[in-house]
Image (cartoon, rainbow, N blue to C red; front, top):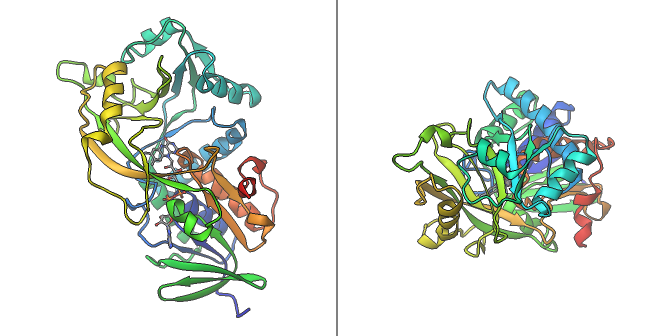
Length: 381
Ligand SMILES: Cc1cc2nc3c(=O)[nH]c(=O)nc-3n(C[C@H](O)[C@H](O)[C@H](O)COP(=O)(O)OP(=O)(O)OC[C@H]3O[C@@H](n4cnc5c(N)ncnc54)[C@H](O)[C@@H]3O)c2cc1C
């Protein structure tokens, strides 16, 4: 192995990679961060101005400590960058009492002693009159630490904090291959090769090109914003009054959203949509057709009738799905030279700082602050 150019190379500076570089640089590591685009770009999974932040994570109780660590680190990053990144407004998960959305959120709260509370349908109607068609049996789980986090600003802030802490982020560079050799890795780019002890592969929708054996499916996922209808109280659809929500309707369809913020209208999306399709992340169809918002417009019409169901804005993004809808972080096959981080499954942005911290701990041989066995990539081996 030739002389090392860096201790660790992070490939991909989106949500997860930008935070990994930051946390590694703070540990005094010689870290090189490479991305084919500039931080905060619109080609991967981390654009669209907002993401939901939740702590009572219905997806897995093991995510609660990651969200809690992320909350601390988002605040740290706000101080160092001087930018608002996370607005905590509280948020509500609405559905039948036996729906996984409700039971999962309550279970996360119970296991981690979170201050979540429940509301019956009468309270829901009073607090959130924007939501129409609630069933009498519906309940709401209130997560007081939920809110919105800003993806482009968050990525830029993490890269900025990383370079302030000494990371080398030289600007756009496409990594063509990562080759484990002896006790390290060779990272090949269009303009040369870098030798390092370890590589963190955080390539988002492109992760499959570096880990072809993993069941990762990049999915084209449009994002949609909706203005208040003429004649309705527009303020009722601002973030202050329409807090972040995930809601399961009587027919089982799930939707998510939040009120208007930062000059953009209310954002609403379906949790799944027959129009979502697997795509090559290098050949995403950016043209918008009516099929891209047919389902969400119908959901808005039924569940939030104070909004105009014609989107005021629509743009495409990418989710990378795994078979169990859980992301992956860890060393494939225990390889001390590689850490994989990806498979976002549509809910990883909020956790990016906490995942970055865990990746830095793994890379530095420290115990991780929480058990991440449930997201280990070898579960798909
Ligand atoms: C519509 C939508 C809604 C979502 N809602 C939420 C939500 O409410 N809450 C939440 O927490 N999460 C949400 N998510 C998920 C969240 O946005 C993702 O989990 C997160 O952005 C994934 O980050 P990443 O770092 O894995 O990928 P990315 O941010 O895409 O980063 C990957 C990076 O790798 C770079 N790269 C790839 N290949 C190479 C290469 N060969 N060489 C150099 N660089 C390379 C790319 O340029 C990119 O910058 C949502 C996602 C979508 C699409």
